[in-house]
Image (cartoon, rainbow, N blue to C red):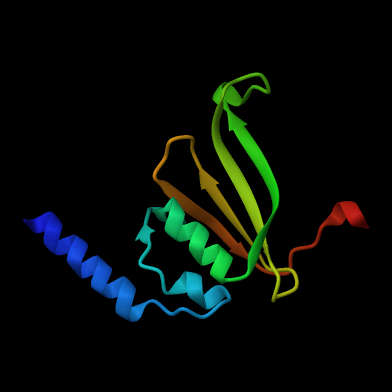
Length: 117
């Protein structure tokens, strides 16, 4: 019963209080699970939808492998998204195979790709 009440309250909050505007404010209004480090997590589909509505596009992906070995199995992916609206604004996320959540690791500004200089 307690779980049903939490789900209903969570849906109510999402429906009535989450801002539907594009941009970084979209991410700030999501009811994230705050961890012991500055990381925010939510269901993969919802986080992907927020990134799309916020006008972010994937610009890079890197894979973490077992034991830090280039030949190890993939255990997670770190994806970098760039804002189409704010120059130099990126968001980095992490997800694992089969995971139901996607976490935002960093919301960064003044990003410069030094390889282009």
